[in-house]
Image (tube, rainbow over all chains, first blue to last red):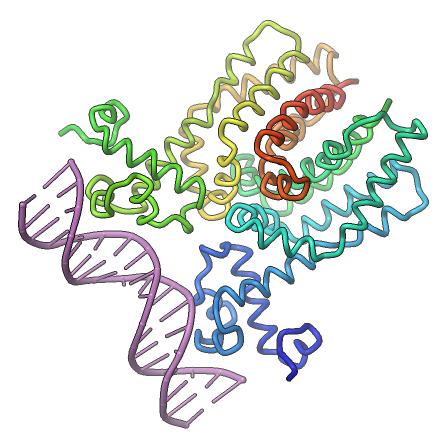
Length: 210
Length: 210
DNA sequence: GTCTATAATTTGATAGAC
DNA sequence: GTCTATCAAATTATAGAC
């Protein structure tokens, strides 16, 4: 019959989704190995038995959470690719979207890095099912067009595409170190990242000049 | 009397250091939470009892391993800073050292990211005791001199110093994804990173031009 | 020092009352 | 559905023989 798993039924099941949200916070913070079912029950302010009633096992609960996290990872870069603006503006928009998304979800990067180490295949599988492969091709095509028309220098797209995430995400991975060593608070860090947008955008654009 | 903890006595205690090396491999691979004392015993090909005989507890064993990992993180950037070569060459040397170190120790970055999330204060404390603070000041001084003499544009050193690690380390954090999505093997990945050195060096130098 | 056996604790999972 | 009580398995840690 109707499974309780789909998102469509989730709103009909406030307790279930409430637990899942609590689990998401705990898993994102502590990772799969570090997270305890007890922690999740406390975070959701229910007892452990109920966790198993709704999700059967820690693994299954985690898989559902992972699915949702992956889903949320796909803000529409598509829209930017299709915009009728210059490459420079597109890059600026990419960087802006990246940094703002990271400011909203600062603990996703270390979580992804941890999962990539613990169980890469499962994570990759979930990522692949995001059907976002087409977008990537669109990106490559755009890139090639720009090279052919002489707007940018011929360069490896793999290398180039790595640079925006590298420059944007890395500071968030080092955030616990940065805020302690500077030192600075959450807000100061976010300000630094917003200022950094310009720096990153300029670097990327310069690196593509002929 | 003489404690067995110091490095001086370690060579007199081959079993102990042998266990520690095994523990290092397991902790680096699986992280503190994911590592099992049983895994470590198997890796060292001894039994669990002996682990506690030498290290008392998992926590203590981990702390010793962490200390050694942190120590190994300090290849001498100092020497490069002091070299009598142009800033451009220094940057190229930095990038080269960074990438080659990462190729030799590819699983350190995700380990550090994990620890930075799990217990940042302990990690930072260990890092601070590396007495490497002086070097950092030297780096800042060098940077400021270059700005004053007009060789590079005035820019935030915090931002600038983040860029080399970001561009070098990030691909290693994404390595499990990259080798599966391309796909490529270990050797191909390392080749890509060696080719990337030039790309990164150029980006950094360009970003500093007036 | 090294091993085997076992204790003590933690943790994921289940059973059953309400 | 939700809770309490409990179980079974896993995991860290210790005791004691050799």
